[in-house]
Image 1 (cartoon, rainbow, N blue to C red):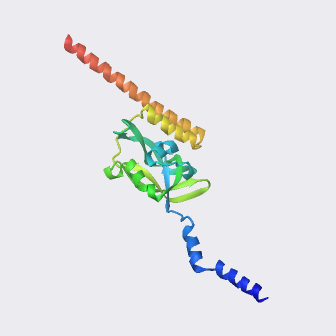
Image 2: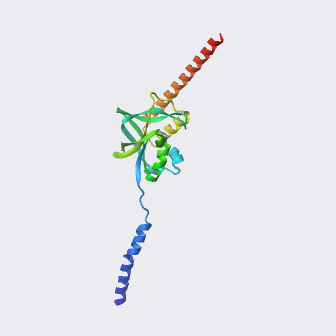
Image 3: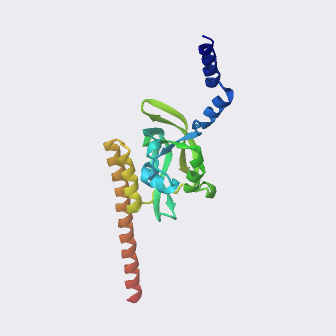
Length: 210
């Protein structure tokens, strides 16, 4: 009888040993700090975002999101991509669809670097994003600091990355077509302007020669 009692007491002490409990807590993975990020351009594509951040970003996708009170526009020229790139402009009658991520805070500086924050190309903007019947406050997105007076066309590479991100992450088909048409029209206008400039230059040369 005394042996059973002693055995029971021994088991209780072992399971409630403060040192072992503390060690067990330390061994449990700690939840790292996160932040919400709303992507509306090339970063909608998790493959492109992975190329930048160096790790798979699919697990960080929450879902398609909506930013109310803004509209899309290609109001910045990227020296890296050699074409127009997306921006968002305040417009109370419009909305922008994109992808909401929940990223680890350790990736924040890499994202800032990609967007050229230190060079005043883009700046962080805190916004509310509607996603899956919820409103995510204090989400981060990026906006062009010095916006151009008119839009500049994207090149084919940027065109495809943006559209692939929109389709892959499940943005509405109607919105994807709208995005496609917007970029296509900009490219068409750019080609027409190039043809017009070439024609004017050729005409000027002919006049000089005659």
